[in-house]
Image (cartoon, rainbow, N blue to C red; front, side):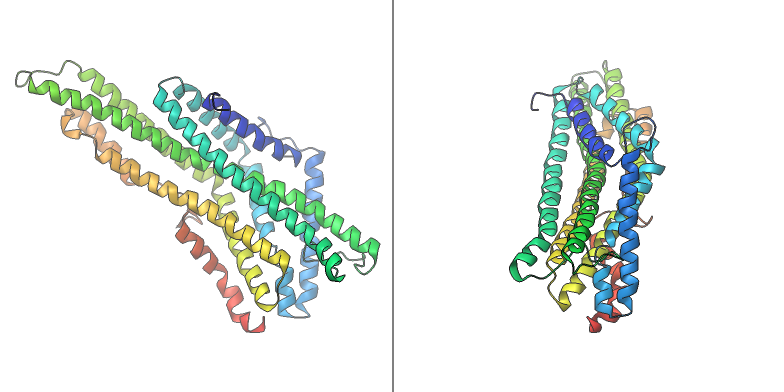
Length: 397
């Protein structure tokens, strides 16, 4: 993998995400989104989960607020999954185009210079590192959650289901009914784990490339400043008013930097337009799950709820931490542009530089609901978004 070209590494990650998506019947990298039998199985599992959950919530609402809250504990997954399916269906062509454009950029710049190839490899290393945390986190947490019923049964004979609902017509008091309920819920858990992994990796892959493209812009600015430094040195030994012999070289580097900044800006806008629904659903769903599981465990310890609380927290912080790093990258891009030795540019070049600087001052950041930036601060605000639903009832829990 170390000796592999960055474009190939990027393609392998994209194909890996597509492989897991295709296992659910969603071939995200194919030119056309073709629905197959796997998608039917996935739809049945998701629909049954939603139907049984809502029936159980309505049933428990008549008993107590505590039981109703416990029944809604994992409904955040429905919000997240719904946002993912809608994004994959409604934005499929944009997702494919985004992957293709990014791969083409990799293929071009890995051949230009070693420092560009190094920056691309650092970006891929960043994705690989985050993907390991995502994958290992889901594997460990979902194995623990699906093992809780067996552990409780072995410890004190109590019958706990994987998901907080029962299926009408199947009694959990009988051995066959209890096994059947948990098997059905296990299928839903496996599908949800794969689906959440696909959604997380899709967003992670495109968001981290913003950091990579920002690194390349910093390299281009550094190269431009080196050319301008040579111009300054040449001016010291030339006649007053004499034209600079390599003025064309300056203009080439300046235009190259401006074009790359435009590419970075367009890429950020395309990512935001394509994934804003998915990102918003992911963060709000995680915040919802965090609050519900927290309130449930205030009343009584729920092992599955504790694990799901950790999963939701880690999931939300992952997106918001990446969003925060993107904000810092925007600041670094703006600072590097401001540090260009603009006084060495001629009149027409300064006009082009001014346009780039103005654009850098109003870079569009990743936002949720059209107003909230994707950052750690927003993670706290997203949690507060759901507080009015739960705070009035905390005395009942």
